[in-house]
Length: 452
Image 1 (tube, helix red, strand yellow):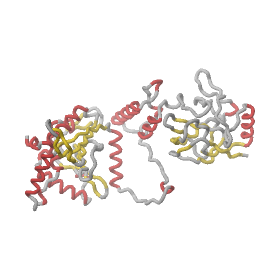
Image 2 (spheres, rainbow, N blue to C red):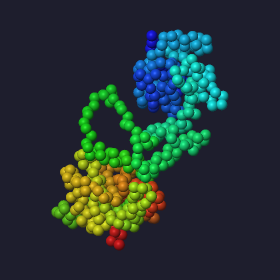
Image 3 (cartoon, helix red, strand yellow):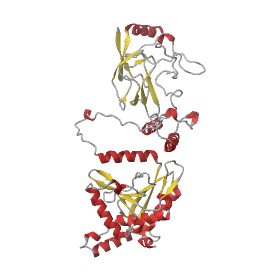
Image 4 (spheres, rainbow, N blue to C red):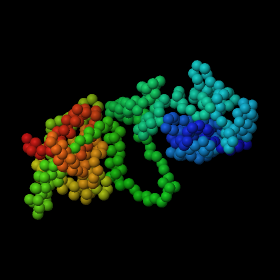
């Protein structure tokens, strides 16, 4: 006959509430004494809660993300009545008194350990049939951080690894006593990505995108449910792949576009009755980027499928991110370096209208060398645009603002445009990144450079 026993969180000492980051059992699992049940994470340590009984899990009453504290009810275990009586006798014989209000014994410091390996040598009478002696380190007094059989890493590194889908068991630590550092996780990811570029990924690869967290939002209030547009599903997968497989570096700067804007406004006033000839900032940005790509062709490069060769394009096609009702699309304008500012303005109007009406074809969005994402019409300052693979870089434009600038004698109001340049650090070094954005500033600050 089985008895249902409560399993509550043991004494956490000076810790208040801690978060559940892993649930290691499910209803129906057969577990032994000291088998790990859940993993907790505080600001300073990762903790495991061991089972006080041998039995079968009947209910799990918590979920990942819950914040729990001492004496919180975690789950139920069905144990044989005879076993429950035997454990009660052991408690009396060992003079281990249960904590008031708890249905499980306190964690004990009397567990036998191997003096050489410092692993638990569980008495034979408490093991399941065929079970080997536990190799987990002993728990003494109260829950402590495990430092032997579990990967040696702090909470922040564990969280970072989970976000990237990295199994820390596969990572070699370079810190004191083999502690895994954030840099070790990043190096592991880069190594796996490099291997995957030359080999076909398999189902059992160590580096996988972590599954989304499942949350029952209805528990907290009313919700609406509607399908995610297919365009966002496709672009989301592409962006995630780019973010995970390309080491991004983002360079920030501002360009003084006071003179450029004065010229643009004068031109637009002169042709006030001809809306088809009006100019926005974007054609100038396109022309400036094309000139910078010509001057620094490393930005017009891509790594081949083997990961061993660099392909440099001898053409300049630039994509423009366009926001539509169904999501973001990136039509590509071809041979930007061969077009005038006025021609670029006309093509921009055409592709933007085509994008917003949903008439872009797959061919309209292929072959880009570089992308511009313009948020100037919305607002904000700097951001980190995600590279549109297989391109090597992307430029983010934000809203220009008038700011005081020192000219050597006094402060003057100047219109400053925030620039955010993300680039692939496998291809482009920081020095080249700085050169590109400085060159871009020069072209925007004095458009006469574009004539040279």
